[in-house]
Image (cartoon, rainbow, N blue to C red; front, side, top):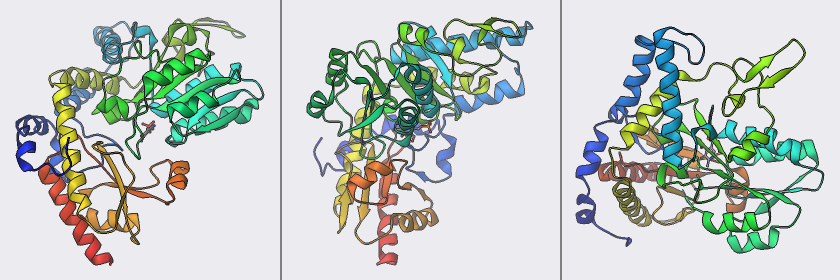
Length: 404
Ligand SMILES: Cc1ncc(COP(=O)(O)O)c(C=O)c1O
C-alpha cells in the first residue's frame, strides 16, 4: 500500500465496512478508535449473552436438567470453535481462562515454576505488555531463573539462545508499535535449542490468521474481548504433552476425578485447569462471535484495515511536530506531538466525543526504550471508516490549537 492513497481507493471497499458497522450498536456513542484496549461487540454476541441470562440460565457439567445439558453441550461446541479458529488439533488443548493475563500466569506458575532452576533463562522481548513480562519476573524471583531482554529481532535471538534457555515468550503483535515478529523463524530457532515458545496473541489474534500447529507454538494465549467477544474470558492453548505434565492451577469443583479428605486425583484435560464455575454467558457469547466472524472475508477485512491505517497515517503525517512509534500500515498507530502531554490530548478528544487511548499502554519498559512516558494510540477495526479518521484528525487539530 502506498502512503498518500486517496479517497477513491478507500471507497472501493466501503460497502463491506458499512455492512460490518451495522452489527455494532455502540458505534452510535462515539468515534471509537480504542479497539486495541477492547473491541466493540456485535449485536449477536450481546443477544446471545442476554438470552442466556433471560431464558436459559443453567450451569454446565453439573446439573442434569435439560437447560443444564444444553449449556454443557454449547460450551463444548464453543471449545471446538476456538480450536478450529486457532487450528488446534484437539479441543482438549483449549482451556478457558479470564484472559491473556491469566493464561500467561498459568503457564508461568503451572509449567515454568516446577521446571525452572537457578540460572535458567527465560527470554522475553522488550516489546511486551506487562502481562507477558510480570508473570516471568515473578516466576524468576521464585526460582532464581533470569529474565533475559530481547529486541524481538530474530538475528539477536540466535545469540541469546543457549542450553540455559528454557522459555522464549513473545507477542504476536505489539500493542504499542503494531510490530509483528517473524514467528516462523523464531519458532524454528527456539525449538532447535530445545526451549519452548510462548506467544501472546492478545492483539495478533484479531488481525492475523493463526495456526498454532503449523507455527509449532507451545503455548498461545488470547482474550475474547479484543476479538469482539465478552470481557472476563480468555483462552490458553498448549501442546497436549505440556498441558498434561503441568501442575494444576487452582483447586475447586470439577478439576478433579476423585478426592478424599487428604488427597485428590486430577481431572483430564482441559478440565484440570478449570476449577469452579466458568464464565458461561461469556463462553456462549464468544461462540456466537466466532460464528458471526465466519460471515466475513478475513482477507478483505484486513486489506480494508491496512488501507484505512494508511489513510490515517498520511493524514497525521501532515501535522507538524508529530513523532510516530508504530510500524507502517498497522491497525495500531502510536505517536506523540512535540511538547504536548498525551493525556491532555485524550481529554480534549474525549470532549469532542473521540475515544482513543493514551499513556504507557501497560508497556513501561518499552516506553523507557522509546524515551517517553506515554503515547497517543489509535487502533483501527473494520467497523471504523474514513469519516472516523477525519473526525479524529479534525479533533486532534483542535486540541493542538488549544494546547499550543
Ligand atoms: C499485547 C497484549 N498482551 C496482553 C494483554 C492483556 O490482555 P488482558 O488484559 O485481556 O488479559 C494486552 C491488553 O491490552 C495486550 O495488548
